[in-house]
Image (cartoon, rainbow, N blue to C red):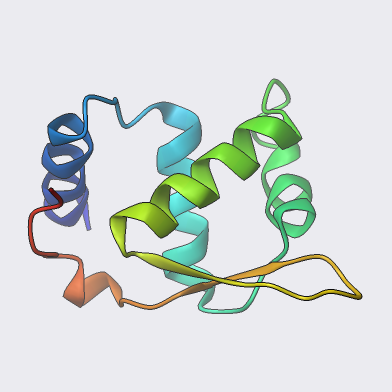
Length: 98
């Protein structure tokens, strides 16, 4: 799995960002669970192992991965938006983001 993260790390750097510990945790959760999650779902899933993570960081990370084409955001008018991983861990070799 780590070689896949290296590919994502390069793409994140290409966008002028870093693959922080929090972003990496959000990405790994989304890649391994393969479920639709709200930002609060992700936050609660990570809070025990990362007590310093904030809901704001989770939202920012999820939307960043949407921009990269790894996640898709499903907008709901009557409930919280959900995020879906649209690639598998084996597909993580994404085209370069411009």
